[in-house]
Length: 201
Image (tube, rainbow, N blue to C red):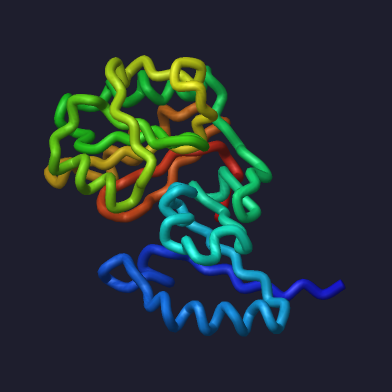
């Protein structure tokens, strides 16, 4: 059986510079996909909830590969999750403490249900995070966050280094410290996304 499929990346590819797209035009094109039995898949490092919101009219009949491949949904149905172990999550949280107090300016820990951020972040940082994540929870004691505590399966950790930080040096330090089961990839804007080895959207 032949499967006809179109898979799109989002930020900087499918979306324009305002993080939107022509929804009316896409709706017309999507109807043609349906007629021709072409499957449409969204693949992104973004959170599933954000992607769902961006494709609200079609969200029940397209597939979502979110968080760089860690979470896969078929419409509303959760198909697979590649979650970090509790030990790896705890180790990354400890590694984060080895950087200077102001070196990491934005921290996110993303799971199936929500993205978790430190309760003490500034309004400006929260506003920036909300551009990319829609289901957000502010948590106290961020440095000791666990999957059991938030009742979620954690799949991705995002670290954004400050503008004055030597980014390449920081990344080298980060990658050298990560356990062998984890990998880090650049997401632009001095940001590294950490997840299980082998994940790719």
